[in-house]
Length: 539
Ligand SMILES: [Zn+2]
Image 1 (cartoon, protein in one colour):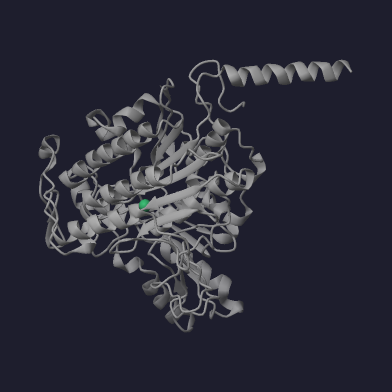
Image 2 (cartoon, rainbow, N blue to C red; image 1 turned 30 degrees about the vertical axis):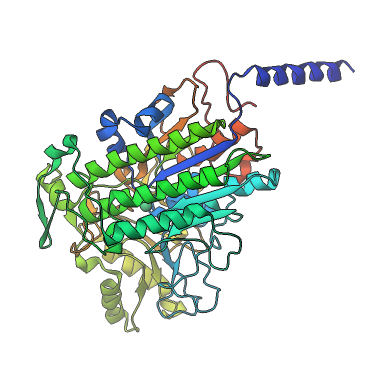
């Protein structure tokens, strides 16, 4: 009896503590992912922000957050943000991977597709969360409170689907000419989609001038690369829908649609908390097309600042208690040509001799077997041994392939699937993980390659730079480090250099709304957002 009495006092005290918290529980959770917004870009520009990215800095700022895994691509990165799980658990090991069991000539599958839908192929895929093995915040919240809604808007289908999950109420992503939803979806199309698509079509037909902000003018220095120049902001051509994605106007359209849906669906005003995931994708397209350190990226990140400010303004107008988390799916680095000009002596483009098809050809000759011996979606990361290689030879061919990669001066390390399978999931601060641990964090024994190849730092895996000059995807920290910022209006914030992970976002948000998640189901840990003696993880 005594014990029961004590327990009821403790429960009563806990209830009073929860009531004494001056901040209302959020009714709307907004997760913003800025594609390729590295911790380095945040550091470089944070003092210049005047809009939403300035305001968010009054919240809880982790300027040194991590997408901790090696496969720093868009799909794996987005799969961590609202699942609390690293790609080893979400199953999203890359944007594209090789699955030799599919009836497709190229054996390639896309992370956000369902390859079992008849007629789909790796280039004409059916968008789906089929490959996502984890539950998102939306999935978990809707299971706990069926009135909750999960809405996702992004420039890229994979960003929307990986943040949204398996039970989205609304999902909209750019198809190339307008925002569309999952194939086969029924239900009325919100007016906001119609108006945003009409405005985007007008902008593609007749692009508005995008003047270079004055603070970006010192960054406008032309850098020659592969027969063209980057570094100086160029006007978009009329009628070019592909070029539209590489302009500020693209993120503005994603923002317009997000704001339209906040208002039209009255997000946060329902019977249970709602989630809105927003993927601002243009920063990534700008990074790939022009690199990270020119006038183009300067104008782009200042545009993100403006768009995030517009989203916050729209949220304020709802008078709904909200929390915003802003992060990125991966970081990035500049093109090797400009890196070379700026003191990065080891910056270079990948040697075309490292193409898996070329190494496979050599092995085919050496062992007297039929090519392709090696298969891959890209010249680094996951490499698969072709199914046709006879069982009796597989170990020897794999050893020879590994030796071939390791003999190349641009290769830092090669791991085998067998080695990674034997390793436990990494623990401890992600800035101190070994290279093998980084690869282990995005290794799925069912899906990953037989060999995992790490290029040396600043080796850009784009041999032909005519269309895309820079990229990400490595296990090095410039691709892993991203800002992670939590913002609740009216709540004091703090800044900490702690290397938290994007997988910590889900349990942290769950703590704010009192959603229970079994720790064994995820990799992340709740971060206490209270700067004082309170604890937002202990509701
Ligand atoms: Zn990305």
